[in-house]
Image (cartoon, rainbow, N blue to C red; front, side, top):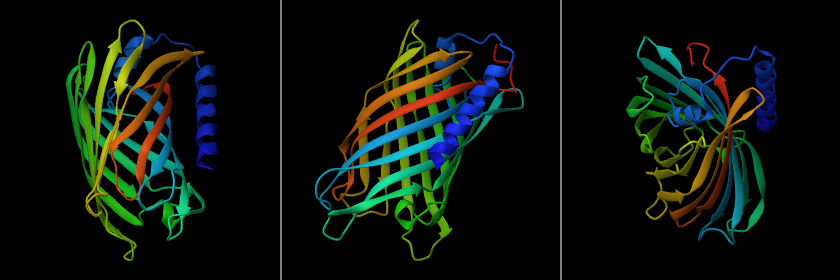
Length: 282
């Protein structure tokens, strides 16, 4: 259902954009560079597909799961020199189910836990860019198997170096459960996305990686840490009047939980780019 809603929103935005009077936009290379910063002066509707290959000692064989995220990024100006981003993440998950012997018994598909990620920081296009905020998670999963059953919140922070040739930095989020189903396990987890991207001059393109290291503090030893590496291509193109930022990035986990976790992840992302109605982007 979420996929169909996302596609509907996408087509609606494209139709509205195409029906508007055409205005001059910055170059595709400038748009591509700006969108490495979540506090970009542009809006983007991010559709992200994660095709994941999982394995571990607790299951027999290798099994595929899927996480499709719709995460609109719509920063707004605050005063003359700061930006505020409040970005919801709507996940649709397809995950295998297992019996006590580790054999696959079926597949569960549906909504996962919705997240809301916020950042507040200076409005800068280059140099050192920072922001701080809060992150939240809500027990919206359509089944117990696809979510935690807990309300969660915690701090978030970003530090980026937006150089002429490289984009380097990190985005950190930490969640702690603050309520929800008392019969479900508490949640304490941290995610650290590290970003290493090389700009390709004149191509509106970067090559590099942006995987997310995750730490589940409540899990047993050997099942807490996931450390992926990756290498992918990001390119901004134009379809009609609308720019799109495209990304393909395979990722491999050099450290993963012993019992069950992601070994490979193929991340595919498409993001229609919209003019921020609160700013003059020319």
